[in-house]
Length: 306
Image 1: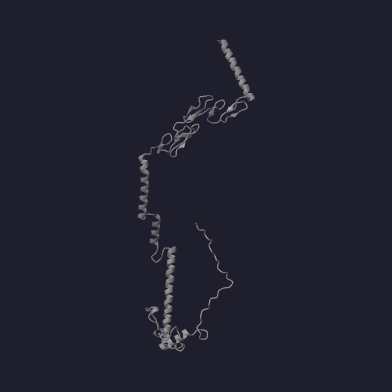
Image 2: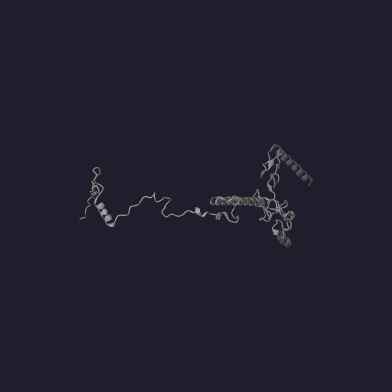
């Protein structure tokens, strides 16, 4: 037994020495699944792979290795739990529901007091949170409406205080009030000028009628300017004037001839033409010489059947 153990130990040391020599000389096989070989002949495996040659697949998020082929070399794939939420070649992809965030352990971090579960798939919000938010919004809207209805805004109160402190004869400064004052002043000045011009017109008319009147005599101010009219200045309609032309400038129009004379003159005009009293006739038609004759076409004879 001791001889067997010593022989096995010597063989193991010899095989390890040969493997190390192969690694040093670069005689080891190539790395699988994208692994990188070092100067010592060892393989540096990428993520989700392990083994001397990176031949073993690694499954995460509680995934299990499943053998696909029974014949060597054996191939393995990852079978993921909850395939509707976990997917990928190594079960590394986690899909969280309802705004959750994926974590490293295959679970999702959900929003507080709203969703629960490994993937935030369960809605568990309390009835207080569901009904409290709409009720709070409705209460705020009602309060705003009441405040605006009762005229409790501080801006309106300040404006009312300014109106109370202002004297009776003064107005609150503003663009609208300034425009209204300017329009009122312009209208008053225009009416005053129109009344003065109407008074001057009435005074001139009275002076023309009676020059002995003094300049201080003025008509009644209550009479409107549009009703002060001189009756002697109204034109008199003359039916003999047509278009502003008098009787002396019009040309007299001869009376129409009697019926017998009109009939006799119309009969003479029918028998007399324009050329020396002879009735004119239309020109006769003459054929053109340069016009070719019409084609003489005759259809070919058709043989008759006997």
